[in-house]
Image (tube, rainbow, N blue to C red; front, side, top):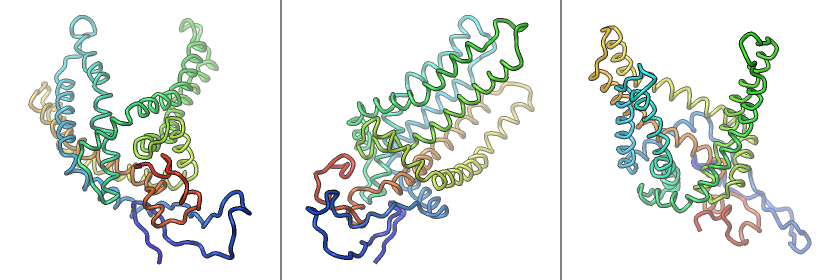
Length: 335
């Protein structure tokens, strides 16, 4: 009898056999009929994302509180800083928030952002965990995770680096030497560079879940992500677009009070610190509460295409090699 869940998107059941085969006569082994994972319908996908994001709010409450106050502090500093001068101490004050964000990015990535993946993955398996074990799991994978991040940055920025070199060669020495054809090529190179960054981000969207959840290597995770995205291009893009559109509309509605405060400040013609702080407090709360749902949008897609090893063995048809072969990071990521 078939059984379908939103977490894995698979239908159970084995294909009927048509005879008896022996593995000794078939060097590739006996395949009992692996079925291809199917993504949930758009409506089911959106419901699964909302449910997973909502269920992860309570166990992640300490991390969300830390993220909220971090965003409030940085937002308040940015809102109240004076950027009217480009030299002297005021210039350093303008650069300081950027430096703080760059220095604090890696700890925030390891301790707040990435742990949402194993946290929500445990919820999907029906065995929710607290946030501290999720952080511990990410820290255990920190070396592989770092190498994966470097590999992804190479994929992102090496083509853009070549585009920058080409820009330097194409730029005229002075405004009087500007050639319309050269400027046209310059614009095309810029567009191609930014287009590649968007395409690369889309192709690598499953690389980090593959590393953190299924213990894949840095290069293997990139191949896995590209294979999943290219093999399900229309389905993945359509579901992400549906979620992004809905999330953007809800975000604009939710942040309307902050927009009203900004409009009141502009209408008054004076800078009001209380109004700025109130807007930052409200916007930071909306950003923090919406973050688990963005992670859930990625994780639901990933686990629909790459089911848990236990779920695949319990329900989906498998090969005899996978059933009786030794455990690996691919077929038994939690062992």
